[in-house]
Image (cartoon, rainbow, N blue to C red; front, side, top):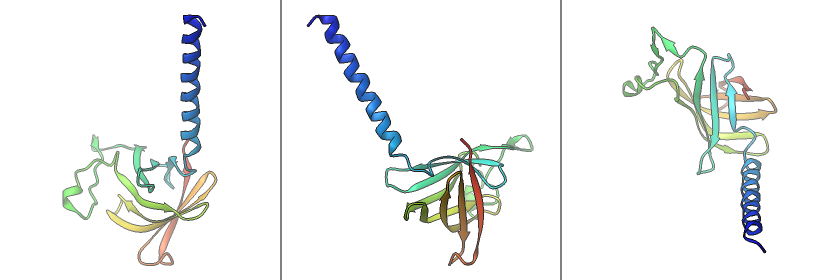
Length: 150
């Protein structure tokens, strides 16, 4: 086999390996991973699965990122030390575990509008995600619906 054929074969094998790994990685993406608009479309939240297998979400876009000409901060947080952290990049979903085909539970949601964290469960419904935040039991809570932003 000539040198150029060896290089071509080597290149083709490397290319096939890269494609196979990319397809495999994409296939392991969960259906809730990606960008979601909140219920009033004032923010986009990026949901990812971390190495611990749990799902997390953070704010990656704000319709109105500034307040009085400065980036919005987490001014309503009950912890005074956290009130200066930027709203952009703010973690709002934490510790969700997949609980069946379309349900995610065991997590929390942080509401930057009032600075409170609530127990939370999520239900995937195709292009929407029902988010139920509650205190104690889910009977005492509120559900909002997020829509896919991609």
